[in-house]
Amino acid sequence: MAAIELEQDYYLHNFKALLKTVEQYHASLLTTDEKHWLQSFQQLSADAQMLLIRLLSRKGILFRFNKLNYEEITNINLAKDALIHAQFISQEITALHQQQVISISDIFSLYTKPELQRLFPTLIDKTDKKAEILLKLESYDDSEYLLSVISEPLVMIQQQTLLAKFLLLFFGNSHQDLSQFVLSDLGLNKFENYQIDTSTQLFHTTEQVNQWLALTQLSDLYWRAHETKDYDTISSVVPLLPKAASWLPLENKRQKLINHIARDLERNYQYDIALALFRQTERTPSRERQARILMAQQQYQAAYDVVKNIQYDPKNEDEYGVSLRLEKKLAKSVNQIFTAPKTFAPKAIQLQLANPERQRVERCAARYFESQGWTVFYLENQFLNSLFGLAMWDIIFAPIKGSFINPYQLAPLDMFSSDFYLKRKDLINERLQAIEQGHFDGWQTHFETKQGISNYWVHWENFSQQALTLALSHIPPTQLAMMFRRLLKDLRHHRSGMPDLIMFNDTGYQWVEVKGPGDKLQDHQLRWLAFFDQHGIPAQVAYITFSTPSED
Image (cartoon, rainbow, N blue to C red; front, side):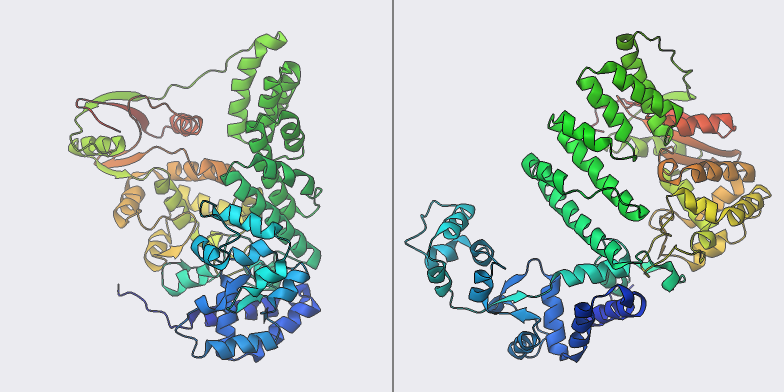
């Protein structure tokens, strides 16, 4: 396929599309100032609009104007003047510093260390690192002198946070940005043509939007600190956390952040704070971490009580499995007898294979089974997930209220909540019954007509026509329906843990989980294998050793 070349002003069209959607669907969530911003933007020349978008898309709020160079902007100086006149940007750097809008460090961080040494040869030592230079300049008592040395125009963008709000209103999340438009323009991402209207918007009040943006800022602060293991900054986020929210999407976001912060503080042995934080959340693995912290503090009875609470009402199979392991560790300390549950031992074979090319152990196993007459696909979770996505395509993208709020979604918003099944119960049950009766209407059509369209479940890059054809001709319909029913019980957690290989021959099909030297079956893999065994679905584990040394 020939590469798609974008027009030079592609981002202007994308930005206008963003603003059009925001105005059309979210006008009630915009302040008077924000509406004025939108009106003023429309009155700018194309050059000024493009320059503003370029600045909004860059990191930071301060820029060295002479360093800006965009071929598509015919007269960048006129564009700058227009933005200053309309108060989109300012170049009154001294005034902005005096008003404490920007700091000396903000200004001079725009310069390289050699540039700073040339600007202030008497203030800076050659051995100073840039961070040390900025500290010296920040503490220098004559800021007027420092600013007077600057001989080039600097510009600061006003209301830079507006873009974050517009993007949030458009996408309904804080991780997609303008680059999503580009990926779509280039044909790298294609999306289903589903229904969007004003009744399916995430935000309904300005307060919800503001609370989300504030929490996103806290989250960004945390993740920057997390990457550098800056536990002081991580601790400083704790008192800034908002109280529990009645609006469920915000509360889910808050609890997710709290779990991350608490886990880092636990790693830093700040057990009391971590425990208090985990007790504020219901998201897994909150209760597991509470039990482990209490064990570390030798509060064994309290830890045991948490474990028993998990077993009484587990959030999912993973949490229940962990609780059994913790109970085993704790039983002796609290004078209890632990009765181990019956363990499942899957069917297994031992294979010794040559691996001169040092391939992955799964590839070696696939090659062996191919030599035994099997047609083998190394797809792991992608095989069953792709079948599920094709079988349920029209249901996944059905116009259910609250499902779709922007044109760039891989799935409905409730895909991984219990609401997905509850809101589509009749449609899903009808489809499962049809599958049980051997009716696969639409699967092949979806594979052909939806090729390349983004669907969370369908992995177009690896899932082939041959895999689909063999699945439909070799897997009994009742077994397909059984596997889908297990998926639907917990889409978030059951989407993984499936065996590495799916194989077909003249007599049937077989799942194979491949384990190399030292590899052990994980809990979620064992659960899938136990499910297969319970329902007569052919599956086994292949334990591989190599007859020649391998790095796998």
